[in-house]
Image 1 (cartoon, rainbow, N blue to C red):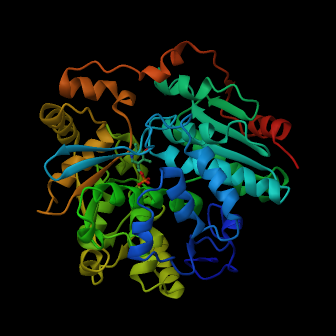
Image 2: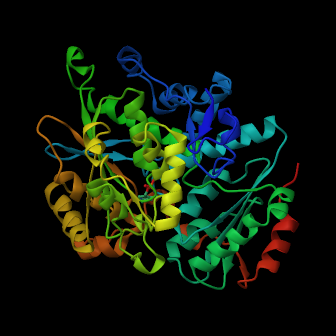
Length: 476
Ligand SMILES: *Cc1c(COP(=O)(O)O)cnc(C)c1O
């Protein structure tokens, strides 16, 4: 299996090469030359596998240049009992008639990014060792995405992490989560400024190609194909669990739908990948919050990224996006996998600020299975409350965006699976507003706030940051 660029300008490369890259060399996104297919019999034969074993089966179809036993060991290490609290790794919980939750937040940072990051941490370490290379990951975080990367990469050989965060802008819990990691290869840097200042510092370093090469800088952002492929595994898992109770004769081809709280379009794209591979998925319902650029795209076919001023800070903050970095992969499919048409569309986007695919929009549902919806703060509060009242389950605000939109799209006889993208313990204020319940830190994290912390405070100063990185970057 080789990987190519959506814009057609990259030599086909194997999985282990593209794991280290965010973008393709021509500025496009990396996609498989042909998406691997799984027959109904093969899918059925995976029913008895535990999550790490299923992950190895699915990922082997992507990572054809990594030996099978190595891949299986990586999956066992990534999806271990030490990392994931639930014995099944991904538990399924029935919420109300027709709707169940797919529990993706059992990992160390209580959010779904652990699902892909833990595998990426294992596979990056392996690939770097094999090619005698080093990687210094630079990131900017306002709280949540950075911690998943740090937990996945802590203690890994040949890798260091430099994570910029805005001083004094994160919750006590978020700070404790990140700054209590004392591993030598994890460097938390609290910048005097806001998140945008952190992001600008990071961009400046990446634009200096000489510095970037000299210090082996890289990122593990949401367009990384290692993450997208690892996320497709839980769509297989959720389908298998949703059909366990059916008579054997009715399982093959039995359709389920998913609703996915979405931001950068990574998670739901993995669902589309699983559908293409052969998981019987009827609908992929995209749930957005007030930042509804993707809901607008799926309803009208017009993609118009927002300005920073038009991007709202909401109570489901991990979905606060102005543009959706993975959407290019979907548009590539819509345009018949034609790199010239895709490149033309992105030129149009750069020149006019929008892409008009309204003539293709009817196919989004009929051919690709996509639908969408959006919600507001009031919807989230009402949904957290009604789910709690009906089922006793407390959900987080991102998952609430999902349940709200899922309820609008449930069809008789088709199980609707909502992806739980974070645990409510990360968002105690809105849970209290909705339910009157004071939700504490989960038992296995008790004492987190009291643990010693290590962080370097720094002015918003590029020269100081360069010197700090140059002195601590891993080399091989
Ligand atoms: C990252 C994130 C999302 C959005 O996922 P995408 O893959 O960017 O669409 C939704 N909810 C939570 C809690 C997240 O951390």
